[in-house]
Each structure stands twice: as structure tokens, then as C-alpha cells.
Length: 325
Image 1 (cartoon, one colour):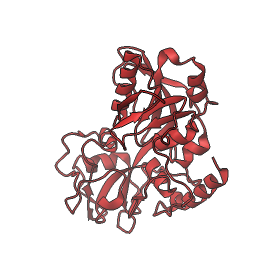
Image 2: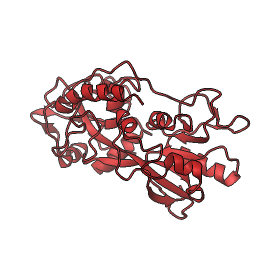
Image 3: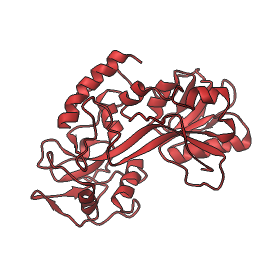
């Protein structure tokens, strides 16, 4: 990873950390999607789209993962190993479990945004490697652009208890059904992600479905929408398509989502760890330990992690939990 690129990106993002306004993305970086055709990493995985680019850069072709977008099937080994492309964290974990059960040895890991849902066994291990988080976005040119929200106030807005803020009628939005941001934000707001409260919509003012991490939904000053902090930074760095538009990230409980150095604020109040999931029986195998286990493993490069918008962890490479799925 070019350290100068990281420094330039941090300098550019420092302005955002102070003002949390619009950002200009450097043109020097681009997201790496699937491993290139004909390239078969030593360790092959399937990943959530949000962490596919950072894991593929960290892996340097020693480990690599296939995300949800592309051809319907993927091939992870030079011969055979053509499997249906998983879409999302749960599907990635299921694909890994299926591979372990069938003993086809086509997959070695899954890159996911959640911990275990089923802890009936300890067959899989969740290894933490970075921190993710959400905040609320408003229009940069609107009356809420300087509002210092508390988490309690946002919960009140999304529960339809507060309808006016600073004299402005508020219009809370959520991304479309199936969005990971929707599920995560709903849990933090204490509402259902399936049946939204009456005042909360997943369509914008133009009757378009709200896309996650996309400022296009912010059509007037009263609109609020959740936005993933790593996505905001990654879009600003040119690592993924820039869809920030008029979006302006706001602090919560007095904590800024982005530091003065242009990195994710790991002390932000709405955060979660993200993981690499491997078969527990393989934790001590050399390729797995080299890639994922311990603070000196390949997955624990803070410069790359922070440039992709995630927070680095002091306990990176440690097993957070075990489970079945």
C-alpha cells in the first residue's frame, strides 16, 4: 500500500472531519472487486460487498474473496469449484458451511459484517479485523447541517415521537428492504426493519427506492438517512463509486464520525466489528494463521483498513466468537 496515497487521502478527509461536508475523491485509487480472471488465491473466500475491496487489497492475492456482484457463478480453484455467487453475509457463511460439509475444499473463509446467529456449535470462528459504523446524513446546505444529534433524539425521530427539529419538519428515511444498513440502523433505533413506523419511508420524494449509502435521497433539508461511515470515506477516496451527493455526516452524542486525520472514529457510539469467518478446526493451520490470526497477520494492516474507511482494532486477528452460522 502506498503510504503517500494514504497521507494524501487523510489530508483531504481532515476537512471533512472538521466540517463533515462534501468531499472530493482522489482519482488515484480504485476498488478491487473479484480476484482477476485466472488468478486463484491460496485462500479463497466469499464476502459481503462492503468488505470485499478491503479484504482483496489486504490479501495481495494470497487470500482473496468474491463479492455478490458479477457472474451468477464463481470459480475459486484452477479446476472445478464452480459455485453459486453468494449475496450478503449470511449467504457467505452458508456457502462456507456447505463447502465444509461437502469437503469440496473450494472455500477457506467468509468475510462478513455480523457475528454468529446460531451458537449451537463451535464449528466456525469469527476473527475480528476492523470496525464499521453508522451515522445519520442530512443535506449539507440545509437547516440540519449544524444539528448536534444525540442517539436518543434520533431514536425519537425514527419512532415518530419527534416530528420537528429546529423548526424543520423531519422526514426520516431508510434504505430499501434487504439492506444491511437498514437492518443495522433499525436495531440501533429500536424499530422493526421489516415493518417501518408510519413516519419512516424507504422511498424518496420522487418515489424512488432509497439506496443505501447514497446521498440522492436527501431531496430537502428535513430528510435524514443512515449512512455507513466507512462507505463515506471509501467513496471520498475513490475506492468505490462516489454517491455522496449532498450528504453531510453528523456527529452523534458529540462524537464526530471521522477523525481529524481523516479516518474512522472508533469511539463513535454506533459501531460494530467486522469479521473473517473460518473453520475452527483450521485455526492453527499456517495459511490461516498467516492471513488472519494475530495482530501481525496480513489482515491487520491499519493503513489499508483505514484508507478503506474502516477503523483499525488493537485486538485485530483475535477470535471474537464461535458458532454454527
